[in-house]
Image (cartoon, rainbow, N blue to C red):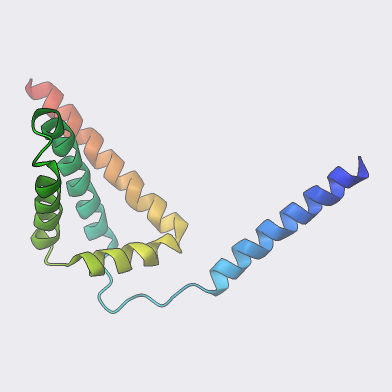
Length: 122
């Protein structure tokens, strides 16, 4: 039994150290950081396009890759950003899990509203 307690204390210490280290190493925001609300919009658009892609994939699998690239590029163009800017901003938000969780919570809420509206229109 004492071995399990020592192991548990070690594991908890390791987790605390890991979390503290991550907080201390929080990067500076990139110069072209995408605003939180815009990230929500981008994620919503990407998920909508991915749903469309899933539907299209069932129909035509040969052009799926090209179609996916086109749709992702069109979302980036809509927000006047490139893939690197999106990736850098997303990586930055990953260091602030509370903000990233909020971004996804807002995106899910918005997607749920869109889904409800579509179901009502049917």
